[in-house]
Every structure is written in structure tokens, then in C-alpha cells.
Amino acid sequence: MSQRSLELITGNATPDLAADIARELSVQPTPARIGRFPDGEIDVQITANVRGADVFLVQSTCPPVNDNLVELLIMIDAARRASAMRITVVIPYFGYARKDRKDEGRVPITAKLVANLLTKAGADRVLTVDLHAAQIQGFFDVPVDHLYSSPVLVRHFLSQGLENLTVVAPDVGSSKMARGYANRLGGQLAIVDKRRLSGHEVAVGAVIGDVKDRNVLLIDDMISTAGSITEAARVCAEGGAISVRIAATHAVLCGPARERLRDAPVEEIVVTDTIPVDPTGLPNLTVLRIAPLLAEAIMRVHTEQSLSVLFSRTD
Ligand code: R5P
Image (cartoon, rainbow, N blue to C red; front, side, top):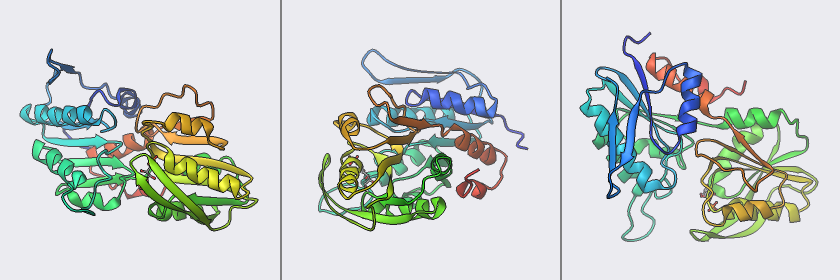
């Protein structure tokens, strides 16, 4: 057992999730004042002693992404200047991840920039869930524990005992993830031929695989404007699926997302609470708790135990 105290500090992005993690860990969150100066600048003060402590800062960089990111950077700086022994940033949803390569001229690699900012500010470790691309781990020169929400989602769908299941990837990028779900849920795999037209529009072609007379589960890492997953749902429904369910780890839900989800031909929308979700107007929404997974990971980091057991477990 670590001799250092575990201090859990939450920013303004995911306070309910942080409180849930604290309950799972049976710790009281470390008090901190995270507010604004009159001109909008962020003001942070950790109001308890964290000298020599093992500090965990919980903050998703979800919308408003720039505010939440800068808040996290300032929290790291405050913890470092308060002489924390180690600072782990717990980022349940890591935003800015979709710009992870230079695929056109004169564009940034924003995921790398954010990784640099976090480590330069003083983060010693990163704990995150379902990065948009696993290789973003390599953008950090500090240890990254990359958890998957699949044990949580798989458990939910196993409890439904779905038969004649086809797990569908809404695009080629999600196919590896979908194959993993198909294996664990005992279903077939199919892939939707998707092309992105702009940040909020997609063009969807055929489904490659079998969806006729099948129960379909569409799985993705995130639902942002919901264009990808609702268009894929429509194609599957038109292709003769018996039922369509959709699931994703991160419910970013921006722009027309809520309207698209409300109108989609789906029985159930399943997400986790890596980002706070307002269920209003979405009666078929199920939000699964990610706190037990994160709490166990935090405790394992704190006590220097392996985290590999968390990557495959579905119990
Ligand atoms: C794409 O690569 C991602 O996995 C998601 O499919 C995409 O980011 C979702 O965006 P939207 O909901 O805006 O279609």
C-alpha cells in the first residue's frame, strides 16, 4: 500500500462523475476552489495540503473544450506548485483527439499539441478511456493507462441475451472495435461504407455484411453530431434489420445530435458518463456508469498494481 495519501480533485467538466469515483474509492474529494476572475480567466486554489501526495485530477476535455482544457492545465500547475509527489490526470474523455495526423497541408496535429501542453504543465501520468485512436498514447512521453469501456458495455448487452446479432461498425475506423464486441457478444461483424463530407455531414453507402433479419448493434467510440451513427442506423433499418441499437463510449452530443438521435430508427441508445449527458427528450437513452472502472484503475495506479486485468474483464 502506498504511504502517500490519495487526493482526488475535480474540475468543473465532470463533477458528478468525480463524486461517483470518490464514492467508489470511499474517499472525500480534496477541496479546491475552481472559479473565474471577473474577466473570465480561470482561478484555481487547492484548499487542502497536497504536499507529497498522490494527486488525481479528474476532468474530461468535453465541451466547452477550451475552457475545460485550460482549467485542467491550471489545476495541474496548482498541484505541481503545491508540491504534489505525483500528478495523474484522469481524462475520461480526451477531446481534440480527432486531429491526430497531418492529412492535408498546413493543418495542426492537435492531439499531440494537447499531449505536450499536459506534460509541460506537469502531468506525470494520464488515465483515459477509449481514445479516438489508440496511438495517441504515443504522443505522451509519460505513462498512459488507456482503459476501454467495453467491459461495461458488453456486460449491458450480454444481459439482454440478444440472438441473431450483428455488430456493425459505422465506418472502417471503428471496425476493430466492432470486431471485439462481435467476438465477446457472439455476433457477426458488418461495416458501413461512410465518407465524411464535413464536420457535421456524412455520406453513407452500403453495409458490408449481413443485417437482414438480424438484431443490429452499432458501436462507435463517440457520438458527436450523431451523423455517423444515425445514418448507419437508417441504412441498417432499411436493409431489413429486426432491431437496431446504438452504443458509444463518449456522448459528446453537439449541434443536431439530440434531434438526430430522437428521430433515428433505434430501440436503445447506450452511452457511458465520461461526459455529462442530459437525458431530456431521449426516452430510449441508457447511461452506464464508468466510475467503477475508473476508481479501480485509480486505486491500482495508487497502489502500484497492474491494470491489465481491467482491459478484458466483463464481470
Ligand atoms: C469517427 O471517426 C468517429 O469514430 C465517430 O464516428 C465520429 O467522430 C462521430 O461523429 P459524428 O457523430 O459527428 O458523426
